[in-house]
Image (cartoon, rainbow, N blue to C red; front, side, top):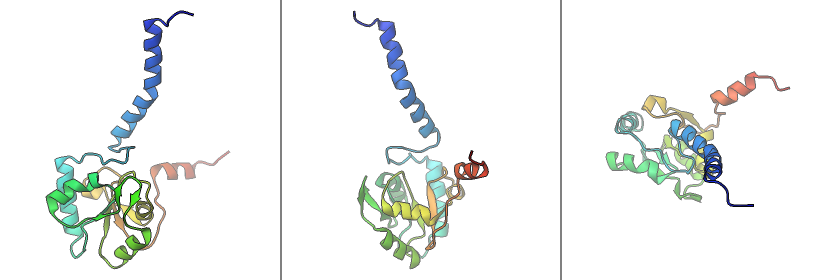
Length: 167
């Protein structure tokens, strides 16, 4: 067998890159990241988030809890208020779910600005939070109002599946 022709090589390369490229476009179109990094907030989103938190987090020790430094940094710089960091880097949890629960229960923190981090305290926040991203001018699944009691997060995907009988 001889060497592959340039057109066959190009065809194979296009096929090999099509799926990852398609997935990257899908993730980016949802203003999300699959790397655990924050989506970049636009100036308008940062303004809206800052106004929302100023109006809804007065009297708290922390402006919000965050699972990613990259997501929290622009707000910290802008507002200058303490933020409860749930993780230092991917996989390195700083605050346990029990500690976060206690801080929510005593009123120290009411909101969580979350990213795609698989840490237990962020999972606790998702189970005990209500998505208020839209009210703050953010993409869905970004900002959560935390409560001490857990509730199931209904999503369009989970309700759609529940409505269809399996068979």
